Image (cartoon, rainbow, N blue to C red):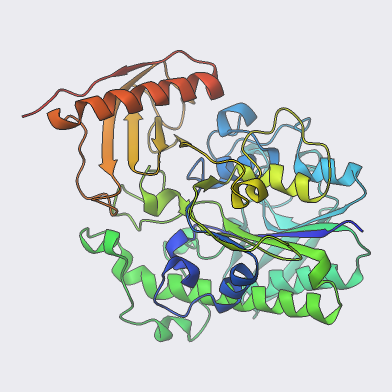
Length: 433
């Protein structure tokens, strides 16, 4: 019997918010238990730390410059090969609930034309949910783009109810994606909003070490941020209980992740779009009817998820799908030597993360909103993650790290050539002292 697959992802959730990843707060007991009984990938990373591009990677198995969705506002191509289309061909009922962010900007913030839904059949969503709703009221749309309103119910709870309705009424096998907006900020209010009473629970909260040294807005936002994550975890718990009540749990693979992290305006003027761990590190747990178990310290990436989903479904994996099988990584059969990160909107930048090093370059003459790539970059940041895990000391340009920079520079150039097909020049930073 084919396994059901449920992909649950939050928006802008840091990887270090899971108890499994050493968060000292009791935020995610349900997700933690899912990972304890299944697989937790402790060092998981997005390949593009911004909403639309990250989602394009997640559903196509390709990098953002390959899908053409290299910044927000660009729609996924109607002809793009996606996991939903491939699973549908393999007998799966496909469903999407929540925020989409992959329809062209000119098509609007709410209803998504069928050709831009990536092959999903059952549909209860909005293109840019943060602009069609608020925490306790708003609008989504169904398969025929009929309006569905909600009021006096927390947004996470409402979307969870829609997911439970689908699970109860759908014959197997199914592929269900649930895309929560939280803990992303409510854009027009310029703040994160937890459910009522939850902000108070996390008043004067634990502050991750990478934030303490910078002003940002973490002091105001963390209580709500943590409250949002707590509620998401409770809703994940509800979904797991429904699966168990319906005797579906053992035949369902549940994947929990996020599109990117959050540094609370400490590294630039907003919440992500940088190479820092707080921006790119994400939670990634696989549980339910999965045989392999354990906490995996090998690096993995968002773009590994599509190939893994197809492998779970025993579907043919197209050559266009990049990444590696998360199952094979967990089994020790393969690994990543580096993670490749593309950065847009805030700047045109590229980075690689190895087990020890973070190396980032920037195209200072390019515009992050209008330019997708560049032929010329300059060294920008170098961090030693062994001695400086919170990335407080930029080593780029330091004479004693010249050889390390040279090695990473060549590795990054090869990666850009491999993924983007461009021979780039990277100018070495002036050495000092």
